[in-house]
Image 1 (cartoon, rainbow, N blue to C red):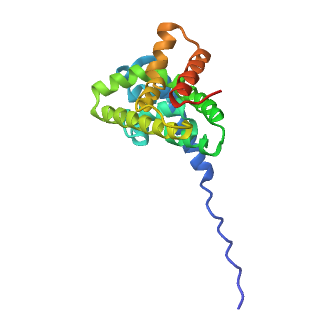
Image 2 (cartoon, one colour):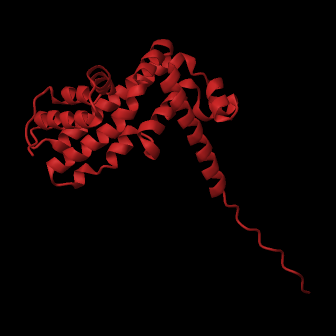
Image 3 (cartoon, helix red, strand yellow):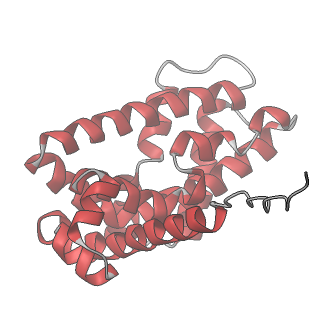
Length: 210
């Protein structure tokens, strides 16, 4: 007895759907970044972001877990790109694979500027958020701790000999967005001037020549 074989069901390809969902999420994050930078923490609401991005407030809350998560995603979209975190972006530099300390320093300075400059508009937003929201305060403390640990790794990668006990703290201050904001807004520094100063200062701190 013979029969007609049933047609083989094609495997469902979810890649297009995932790409569309990621594109939608990225659009909301970029929209939020602009509103946070322009309006600050208090005036940037989930409803305002949803309206500007043409999505529902429920979608924003579900996707980002609330206003604090939305701000973190907004800052990542402005600074870290698709890698998703400061640590991942730093690791992508692969400084440990570069034998020349001067080249490692150049790469780090470029990286620092790419992160710090876009972060500067969010400095007052973070301060407001940490003052109003306990979750934001915890996020800010975690971010500061991560910054210090990243600088520790940097010093190990750049230093060619013993360094001063204050070296890590010095570079933390040099690479804070607040430092760049002070130099840019109050002293009129360009990004190029900040980058040159940062390179000289870090080189001196870790005893890198050239």
